[in-house]
Length: 126
Image (cartoon, rainbow, N blue to C red; front, side, top):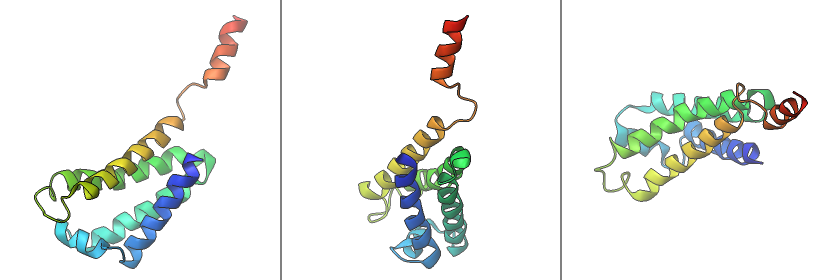
């Protein structure tokens, strides 16, 4: 369920960035990095969201999304912190919450994490 919700949210976010709607152009102008960065992060959001829907690739999709939205979180807390509009609480909380959801997905789908059920079963057999 979490994969579907987060994946759907990032598909919408990717579309808004790639199309240039929902204040994404103005947001990137406020950062000062130009519109190439909007296309880069929109592409990363799209790739990450698609990977979330592939069960074996969910971890990697979450890592891609963490890199994209995590950067937005850092920029919102640093570069845009003094801006009256873009430094507001809503513009800081949104990427922070999305980063937290992507981190949760990465943690839950970490490929090297032992399966608790099989670990319990093997300890009972020994």
